Length: 382
Image (cartoon, rainbow, N blue to C red; front, side):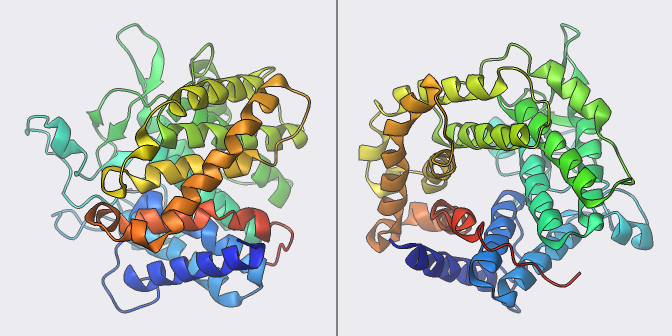
């Protein structure tokens, strides 16, 4: 595909998503935090690549919808208003102060209900790794619009998330729990995601860098305490994984660390090299598995596409490191995954349709539209 063809296909996928989920139509608003975080970044990338105002308008409209849907209590919840507990006026000024719901179809588990591990996947609440995805999306909005309010909102979200999810363990060490209740008052799943503290650390550094770029004296949370504690949590941890979605995230984290290093932000002496080494180890293992030989009905597209997105981002990394040389032979894998799911025949099955929104949004991302649009930093009027 040429760059223009990739942009056209991504635009078609994203406009369909906008109409289907109530963003550009009168349909019911179907908001889901992970999918919407990728969608915001896609719309910004399309606005840059095409210069068309409609994509920027969709990005800003989506931010507003996410905050007003996932920043407020569910319609089937007896509680009303902002999940932060702020009144209507203050909630509008600080829509992320209470965090953001996942957007799962079932209400969260009540405090008197027994844990059902399978059912928990379908229940609402707050995920730290979804919140960091939204932080990255709002950071892109901040940089694109140059409006400090978006950066304030995202730093308030980061401060809230760190304060709620960081807990002590039986050993006394601090860690992040995986899932919290909607109001952040209790842990629903106390285990920690493998990459959650890493994502939190890198994201907080990015948000502070953006705050400094937008204002000489930014108001709001400094995130100094969060950065300090998260840096302790990532010391001597093992990042390697064979999960394709986790691998893709690891590669993107390496790209983000490299960007921070170019900005002169201290990120640790060997974090970049460690992330690359972990990625290479995971890819060596994953490439020997038979997952990609399975029929489409037995594959989860969005997990594979996460890897394709990470590999596409890593193609821009360069340098003499041995880890980079070991990474390059795997780049064709990302292109192969994207090409497989671009085939309409592979999308005509119940497995694809069950996760259609997240699949199509991440398929659009895998087309590299952020890279195509990076050379044209068009932005809306302030």
